[in-house]
Structures are given as C-alpha cells and as structure tokens.
Amino acid sequence: MNSLTPLIQAEYDRQQQELCLIASENYVSKDILTANGSVLTNKYAEGYPGKRYYAGNNVVDQIENRAIELAQQLFETDYHVNVQPYSGSNANLAAYASILEPGDTILALSLAHGGHLTHGHPVSLTGKVYNFVHYGVNKETEMIDYDEVLALAKEHRPKLIVTGGSAYSMFIDFARFSRIAREVGAWFMVDMAHIAGLVAGKVHPTPFGHADIITSTTHKTLRGPRSGIIFCRPEFKKGVDRAIFPGTQGGPHVHTIAAKAIAFEEAMQPSFQQYAQQIVKNSKALAFRLQQNGFRIVADGTENHLFLLDLRPSPVRGKEAQLLLEQAGIIINMNSIPFDEQSPTNPSGLRFGTPAVTTRGMKEKEMEQIADCVTTVLRDHTSVPAVAETVAQLAKKFRIPGY
Ligand code: DSN
Picture 1 (tube, rainbow, N blue to C red):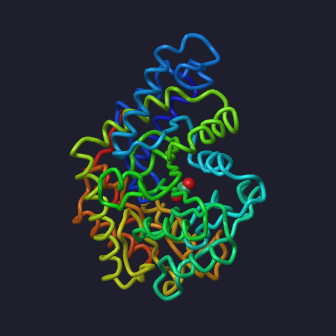
Picture 2: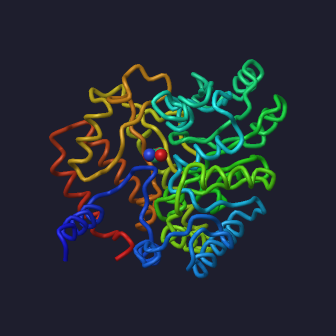
Picture 3: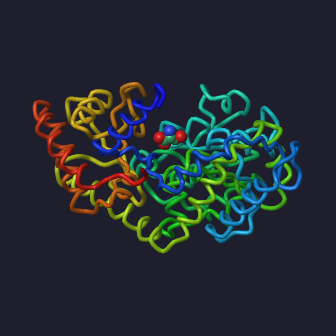
C-alpha cells in the first residue's frame, strides 16, 4: 500500500459509477492492464529489434516483432509498422518529420471543423514548424467538401495532405483524398486515431491502400493501452523509423508495446467485429433519440462512434452543459461545432461517443435511456439529483472490465 493506492481505487470507483460518453475513451481488458503494469517497464530498448543499443533485449525483440506482425494481420496490410510511438500526438509529429522539412506546406482538416491540434493548430508545435493550410466542412452539409479540398490543394500545392480528426461524424472518402493528393503531387496521410477500432472491425472504410502514411492512437475505439502507432508504405520505412528513434523519442515503452500487441490480438476476435458494429448502432441510436427529443445533430447524424450536438437552441453552452451532466454522472466533453461563434473554452456543442458504454455491454435501449437523461438535465437543471440516481443504477448494471 502506498499513498497513491487509495487514489487509484477512487478513480476505479469513479469509472465504475459514472457513464463515459467521451468519444476518445474506452476500458481495456485485464490482460492489457496486466501487460501495461508488468516488469517490461523495467527495460531500456533504444533501437529496433535486432539493433538495440543495450543488452538484454532478446525477449523485448520478440515482443516488438510480435506486435508488428499482429498489427499487420489486424489491418490486413503489408505496410511497414512502427509500434514505438508513445502517443498519437508525437506519432503525428514524427510522421511529418519523416518526409518534410520545416516550413513545408501541409493541407489538413481544421480543428474547429473536427480536425486535431496536431494537424497544425497554431498552439501546437506542428503549427509552428510547418506551414499548415486548413480545409473545413461545407456550411450546409457540415461534411468535408472534397471540391474545396481539391481547390485548396491546387492553390497551395502542399507536400502533404492530411485527413482524419477528433470530431467528424461521417465516413471519410480516403480514395477521393488519395486522388486529390496524386493530382497535386502531394503525399497523403490519414490520422485514424478515432476510427482505428471501426476500421479493424470493418465498419468504416479502410485507409490502407490509399494513404502513404497512417498514424493512430491505440486507446480509443481500438481499445488498447494509451499509445500510438505508425503505418507507412515500404518506401517511407527508413524515414518513419528514424523520425521516431532517435528523431523524437528515446527508449520505447516496452510494457505498452506488449499491451498494444494484446489489443491487436483482441481486435482480431470475431467478438470485436460485433463490438465495432454495436458502437455504431449505439451512436446512431443515441443521436436519433436526441433528435427525437428536439436537438440538432451536426451533419444530421453519424456514421461512426461519435457526433456533435448543437446546444444553441438551449440556454446553456458547452461548459455549463458538461458540468451539469457531470453532476448527473454523465461524463462528456464540450466541443466546438463547425462555424461556432463561441470560444473553444465555452463552445456551442457537446461531443458524444459510444465506444466506452458499448464496452460495458450497453445497447440501443440503454442509449435511449441515456439520451433521455441528457435531455432532462439540459432542459431542467433541477432534475440533476433524480437523473444522477437513474445513471447510477445503469452504471451498476453494466460493469467496466479490468480488475
Ligand atoms: N484528446 C483526444 C480526443 O478527445 O479526441 C484527441 O487526441
């Protein structure tokens, strides 16, 4: 027992007692928790399998090679795989560094329209080092406007075109992006962090075969440990590996690489495909019920695990809505909606995601219940204690996996 044990227990209790609708969070299995907390954390392994700087890496080499093999099997690809990225953010930075020079132009989806900070937002190092130009979604459809992407690509002649993001609820046409990139002589990168589990579960079109480089986290829909991964066509292997080590990282986190390998193995089970299908069914059911309850959903729905709810007709904005829902035991994040006139610190939207509640075994019926709880809280703030009781009952019935 140490002074942190009660706090870790308290966090376990919080996760157990509340409902998580944060689109980027999930619950890992006991096997993944065990690997991540194993003696592998004791080992330094700078370098790559067969080419380490320190002795004692015979077992580690087998673990890293197995992780690579499983990642290739899972995504049915012969792309080169680097399983060493510590996270999605630095996987992205290394991916850029593997093929670009500082100052080079990159075309990417803007954060305000569903992209990601590391896709060149000015506060991110990526936005300071590279010359980012951003495309957005169409004001009417709130979906990516491929004609706009092509026009911007022709105008700015980027060396790299990036797609993917953290708050875009529709399928992305990777083949179309690839054609645009080819037309302007750019490389094409997909950040599939949010949708990796849906791609693995075959409920989202795959970027493999279209993108030159694919980055991802492993802890969102893919339900692995908190970490990153990069896939690339063989011709980019040397650049990607060097950009990770020694370019942007030191010794890999071997315990996390083992945990990632287990996540890939788990995602190859038929039950994972059912899980991925249910994530999307739940997302659609939650969005539909919220629409029935009178809310507007950005882009009029969802094709994946997440969607944005437009709070503008209601008196509350994102910050207050997030807080009220937290008080009721529903954990969610405020989010900008496209063309938001509010600041990102108190935006006009909420982002809903179903990967975590689906892992707990919830289905469409529970999504309707959750949508009604959200609606009640947002309509009548005095309802928080009553809704908290309903949420607690629901959480008790659907336990989180792990210890
Ligand atoms: N913070 C993650 C998300 O919530 O989508 C992205 O990195």
